[in-house]
Amino acid sequence: MKKAATRSSPREAAAAEVVPARFSADAVPAEGGDGLGHRLKRVRIDKGWTLKEVSERTGVARSTLSKIENGQMSPTYDVLQKITRGADLDIVELFDQRRQNAPFGRRSVTRNGEGKPHRTGTYEYEVLATDLSQKHILPFKARIRARRLDEFPGWVRHDGEEFLCVLSGTVQVFTEFYAPVTLKVGDSTYFDSKMGHAIVSLSKEDAEVIWICTGITALS
Image (cartoon, rainbow, N blue to C red; front, side):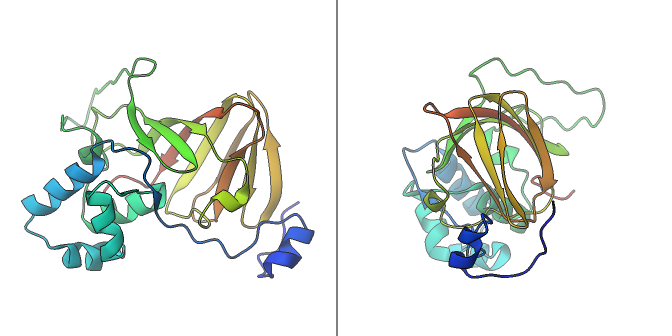
């Protein structure tokens, strides 16, 4: 049953099995460089922007942008969205340099394990179909590494909607206005991305999901 969108203290929310309202996502420590920071820096320099200008455009702190560019921090999904929207980028520009401008009759095939990796402290993404730019959706596989809600620095929130389906293991989906729900292999969920959300694995091994999001690519 849908719960009222009322604010409550973390202690009261925990007692009601509803996620604490304190969550507000930010970047998390990087775990190995994947080149994304370097590509982001190259795009910024190509556009002639300073870190301060990018910060003003995106709403991401200058110190956070600097850490991302220097491989000291790996941006979360919502931070990536702030950067791509504020800098008027397609997220594909940060993961793959091949561009396809044709708006009709496109196709992309991503072999198992050949997507572009992006690792954060809680999820391990494999971004799919990165050879196609200006997509209306962003598809990816994700390994859910988090086991507890307190592993997240805060709620994940961003524009758009998203769908996920469990491929292996069992996950628990936390959303801001609903009680947590447990999903097993073959189960799926669809929700508004502006609503705070976070996913944890209940399995001994990392759970794996297929994840599809809208609203992440730059506006044309």
